[in-house]
Length: 229
Image 1 (spheres, rainbow, N blue to C red):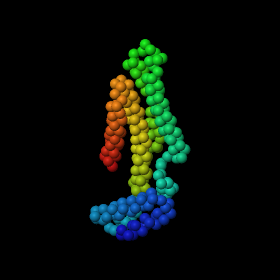
Image 2: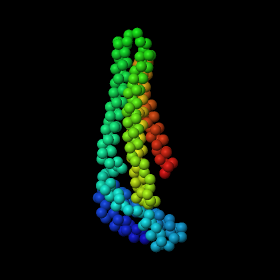
Image 3: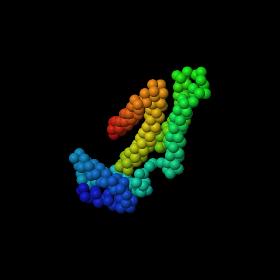
């Protein structure tokens, strides 16, 4: 029966694109279907009944053929992908601009406002940078939530594959947003601590802390995914 299942799925994928992604998913369908068949047999189902049940559980694989033609399929349209790329690029540019504004302010504030205390000058620079960071943060959050909400139409392998792909894409978008925010905060903290203490040979450790914060954030994502799985 295993060979019958494999042959049936091979026929389903006869018109599938000849890509690595399509071949990997075909093997995944074969493996899952065979495992499900043997589970049904062990539960006492007759061979033919188990065969019919696992075949119907596959779904319409042709729905995925167009997306499987791409090596890295995304659930967003081309227009949405371009929009998201523009949002991410603009957000990154604004974060860099905020850092430049903060640094420029700290370098010129004492010359422009000689009677301003250094601590006050630092706070003003930080407020300016934080205000500039509001729009790019909103842009990254919006870009991370551009993927439409997914809901299974049926309980089959095709819909499960779509759901898994949706979760991966959404998680990747959120990771990019979180990473950008972490590194911007790290950069600001680095400059603040450096200008206050003037221990430039030591304050670079701030970037190690930023790296640890990013690793922890990604670990939380992984643990959450395993819990949901």
